[in-house]
Length: 367
Ligand SMILES: [Zn+2]
Ligand SMILES: [Zn+2]
Ligand SMILES: [Zn+2]
Ligand SMILES: [Zn+2]
Ligand SMILES: [Zn+2]
Ligand SMILES: [Zn+2]
Ligand SMILES: [Zn+2]
Ligand SMILES: [Zn+2]
Image (cartoon, rainbow, N blue to C red; front, side):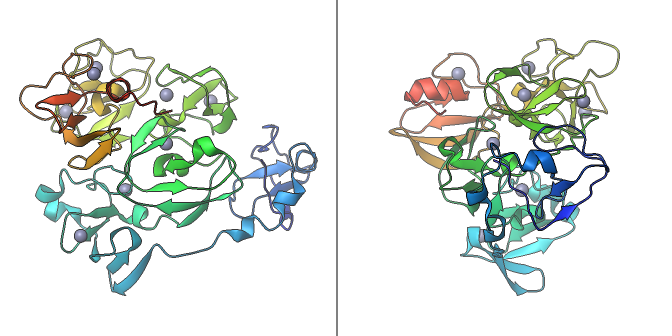
């Protein structure tokens, strides 16, 4: 569904049409979206009735309300809707408190809080990146004309766009696309054209039935981000990978690499299998450490360790896999490699290593 503001007819130089993907030149009229400044559509593409639904268009963009996600209590002190029991203080200089914050994750995006300014609870360890604390309460996502609302509760969602479980902030909608009822903040942050630091050209959404991701080589039957200049496509999981992570196998931060590192071969420090240089991986720029994306992050990297959930009929805990010996997975019987795993609290020493093992163990189909 294409939505653009009829009131903003401008001549656009450069860019690509959001419908036909061809260049928008300065010689043809184009509509540009009043909300997403980079979104443009050729006049002739926009007026094509098969893609332009006038009934739904009227006023839809203007319905998004600008509701603040927090109230300011005093200078640098806020009360956020997601943590109304305590106040959060803005800390600009995370370096001074690094010892404590080294392993604290943002409740919204689940990434470490060491990167960037952070709102930190004055009474507990609840933390939000400054940009996550400012996520809009209402937002329109790329695939649906209905507005999405920001929510946070003690549940796990399965985001169909990236195929990951998530217990952070999520956007939810009563829209027409029920398979995307819940969207995590990573996928919700994507818009087109996407300029990704690991690809030269801008990327555009493509709804596909069978397409290989050039970063992970997995087939996806869903939205992807594609480059038509060089036939490159990226699944939304890879498109939302962090560019830098911490992993217990190295004291340095690890960076997302594409296309090989150095001249020699690289072996994964977790599984000891040789890395395929055609797939993206994480590696240290200071030493030899390199890891498969899957070994570095696992399937539960978007869950908060320490939280308890009832999954199926069982009480499960999200735990860090940081014991001296790695436990065996109760389903596949191999040692758990992922840094975050599930523990079945109803039984002694029962651990689950991956999404597919969790799905089989609990007889739940997540998709
Ligand atoms: Zn965050
Ligand atoms: Zn608190
Ligand atoms: Zn997602
Ligand atoms: Zn991928
Ligand atoms: Zn390209
Ligand atoms: Zn590996
Ligand atoms: Zn290193
Ligand atoms: Zn397993």
